[in-house]
Image (tube, rainbow over all chains, first blue to last red; front, side, top):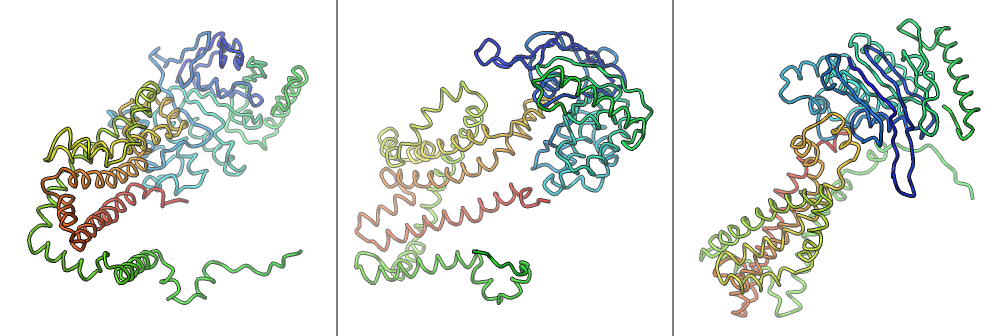
Length: 254
Length: 272
């Protein structure tokens, strides 16, 4: 598990130029322990940029961000992207080994275990091109879990999948997460998905400010058909409608 | 106008209708064979029409004569020695410089112009220059081969490196993959097609280079021997060596590069 601390974080693309564009504006929040946090908001509000900054792929302009393991050591990160991002010339198993520490002798066993957990134990020698989109995304999820990350970052991992495949993968994700005790930061534009999965929902508004930080206190495992889940989904959607009214530049909140 | 659509037939049904001989005649091997037969017939026709074009029979006679005299293996050994060193050096240097240009904008700014200059200089110019610089012997054909081939490898590899998927690079960064593993497991496999294309060019251009250098300044070698027959006004002998040059390139391309290409890209053929 990890401790993620974000304080007064700003990100401006093209800072100091005529085309300067601020996408994150003094964001502050903490995430610690086995918590599943979703970040929702309309397109262009800086969700993916925030994840890229957390993962170190992008630099921030100002403010403070730190990700540490429970003991204060640097945190190990796992990242699940919108698309699977697999190396097409490496087999499924070798793709998972690619992100493992090459000196880690237990990596192979771990890779096999997570492949088994996502139901792909027989597909380890397949090339990604031989798998369907849903299966490739399962490899992406297994790859991220197999590095045993302190913090798992997920950027709209089910947005490119059909509804049935996405529902199956969400159930699988809840199952794996409940066993693995990870800290998860999950970006989605789907409020229904966020309520089903999360302990907390951080709502970003256009311009990159936090509009609301909502606790989701419902028992797990959750199903969309549960009345309590459905009620809360409606409530969160109503709050987003409220945001839309308060910030009229939002074309579509979700 | 309206189009009437009846039941569409499947590929299997249509394939079942066609006689087997039609499938064989329209296959890739058939197209390849047709070209060789057409080229041979054209050669026969031209030889019959023009006195200064030797026909296949006289060229084959001369070839047999060259083999019998022991000229072929010795001269080809010389040429291959020079060619192999020149091409090997150009591939190693080309990959290193190409990766550097692909990864570093500063290296690109520094090296782009010299590479373009190298590309624009024909092999014949390098052959003249190296004969002037190094005289007769091995050095001139080796350097000509290298200088002719290396810009093609550099250009192809650099383009390949610049085209490596941004998404895959970001994925590697987010997982903190060390640079050496990133180059080995991401960059090199991603550019392998470009490397193969570059090496293929290098072989063809290098072959031109080595033969030209031997023609103008060689003491032995296939190019030197072709010039011997040219100077002797014996066109059948000259044509016999041209047939050997072409044959070597075809054999190299089909046996080495086709196989290497199929092996390197076997993952592409296995799609869902």
